[in-house]
Amino acid sequence: MSLVDVTQMAMAIWLLCWRKIHVVKKVVVGMVSDGLVMMMVVNDHRSGCCPVPVTNVGGLSQLLGLFDSGTSRAAAMLDLHHRILPPAFLSKYPKEAGFCLWLLHPEPSSRPTTREILQSEFMKGIQDLSGGELLPLIDEEDGESELLLYFLLLVKEQKQKDAFKLVEHIQYIEGDIEEVKKRQPKKSLIQSSSSLEPSNVSGSSVTRRGNLSSESLSKIIPGHDNEIKLMSNIRQLENPYFLMRSNVQLADSDVVTRRDTELLKSRENWSIAGNNDSKYKTSDRLGSFFDGLCKYARYNKFRVRGILRNGDFNNSSANVICSLSFDRDEDYLASGGVSKKIKIFEFQALFNDSVDIHYPVIEMTNKSKLTGICWNNYVRNYLASTDYDGIVKLWDATTGQVFSHFMEHSERAWSVDFSRADPMKLVSGSDDRMVKLWSINERNSLCTIRNNANVCCVQFSADSSHMLAFSSSDYKTYCYDLRNISTPWCILAGHGKAVSYAKFLDAETLVTASTDNTLKIWDLNKTNSHCLSRDACISTLRGHTNEKNFVGLSVADGYIACGSETNEVFAYYKSLPMPITSHKFGSIDPISGKETEDDNGQFVSSVCWRRKSNMVVAASSTGCIKLLQMV
Image (cartoon, rainbow, N blue to C red; front, top):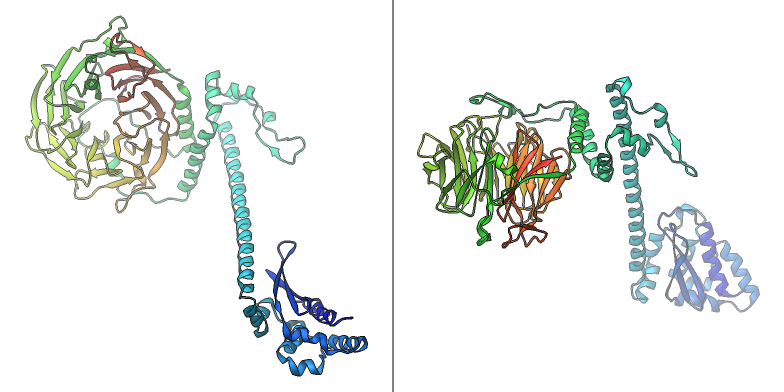
C-alpha cells in the first residue's frame, strides 16, 4: 500500500466517522496524485458532485517519503487508524498533522463541520495558493441551491392557495345551487337531483360534481342565443359572481363604511313628483347578481329603428355632434356640436325611413362651437348650453332665443347639467379648472369650486340636492357636498388617463369613463373622505376603444351606453365587465349620402338613453344620428 493510499484512507476514515447532518453541502477531501488534493463538493439536494482541484500540498505529500518499506507503511496505516502519525511527520509538518488528527477525532461531535474546515488555517493556506477560488465557488453553489429551493417552496405555496380557493369556490357554488332550489317552486325545478349526482371521470380519481349537460342548460336558459351568449362569456361571468360572493363574506364581517351616507339618500327640495327609477340597495347579493345576469341575458343586439341625417356633406369636420339630450317628456331630441347650432328634432321623425334628410323643428345658432347641452327636467322649454368661449347660456326652445347667459368662465366650458332635485340650479365645468354653480334667477354664480386640473364633465345626483360629481383631466373624479365646498366629499382614483365623463347610476353608485379605454363603477358607500378612494371601484368594464376623443356616456336603469373610436356604440350592464352588445356605424359617402363600410377615422361622439324605453340615440362624428333599440 502506498502513502497515497494512506492519506486517502485517512480521509475516508474521516468521512465514514463523520455523523453530523449538513443541510446544504459536504466536502470530500482526497489526494489523487502526488501532493494534489481534490475537494469534492457534494450537494445533499441533488445527485452528483463537482470536483474542484485545490492545490499541491507540500506537507501532506512529504508523507509519501517517510517509509522505506511496505511493512513500515502498513504499520503506519494501522497507527493512522488509531490517530497515530509518524513522528517525523509530526515534527516537520505540525499544521498538516493537526489537521489530520482533527478530521480523525474519535468523538463525532468534535469533528469539524464543512464551514469549519473551509475556515481553518490549513484550508485557508490551500485557498490562498489556489487564488482564493474555493469559497466563492462554494457560496455560488449555496446560492443556486437556495434559489431553487425558494422557487419550489413558492410554487408549492401558490398551488396550495389555488387549491384552497378552488375548494372555497366550489362550496360557494354548491351553497348557491341549494339556495336557488329553495327559492323555486317545486313544479318549476327543471333539474332532477339525479342530474346533479357526482360522476367519476373514467381513468381519473377526479370527481366532478354538478355536471350539467347542454340539454339541461338549454332548459335553464330558454333560447339558443342566450345559451351561446352565456357559454361564450362564462369565464368573464365567473369574475363578477365570485366578486359578489367575496363581498358577501366582507358584509358578514361588518366592513366599516362611511358614516355620512345620509347625503346619498337625501331627497329634500324635490320639486318633481314622478317616477323614481333608482334601485334600492339589498342585502340579497345572490338575488342582485341574478338580476344583473337576467338583464345581461335579456338583450342580444342593437336593432336600428331610425336614422336621422342632417350633416353638411361639404364640411365634414363641422358635423361632429358633441352632445345629445331629451326634453322632460322625451318627445324632442336636441343635438349640438361643432356646427355651432342646436338642432331640435321631433322624436317620432327618427322612425321615418322615407326621408333622406331630416330638418329640425327649430334651430338655434351660437357664436362658437358647442360642447354640451342639457334640458331642464321641470321647465320643459328651458335648455342650457356650454361652448368654446366658456359661456353658459339658457335658451327658450319654444322661441329659439337666449334669455340668459353667464360669462364667468375664462376658458372653454365642456359640460353643463341641471339639478333634478332643484331645477332652478345648474352647474358647469371648464378648462379654467373651475366648477361653477348657477341659479336661473341670479346673474352671478352662487359658488365656485376650484380644481387642480381641467374639468371635463359635471353632474348632479338625481337623489340629492347637495351631491355633485365632476370628472377631471388629472385622472380623478371628485364628489362634493355643496354645503361644504372647501374640501371634496370624496376623490375617486383608479383611471390611468383623463376622466372624460361621470354619471350617477343611482344614489350610491357612479360610473366614470376615461381615455384609458375603460369604464369604472364606484360604490360611494366605500369611499373615504380623508384619502383617495381607490377601493371604492367595484367593477371595470372593457370592450370599447377610447384613447383621445369624447365618445359620450349615458345611463338608464343600470344599463350603460358609450361610444367608441372604432365607430361603434357599446351597451353594458353595471354589474358585468363585458359588453352586452355593440353596433357599428358606417361611413357616410359625401356624394350619395349613403352609408359605406369604410370608417375613415370616424368615431361615435355622443350617446343618450331614452329612459321610457330600451332605446338609445347615438351620433357619429359625421353628424349621422341613429335610434338603436336593444332586442
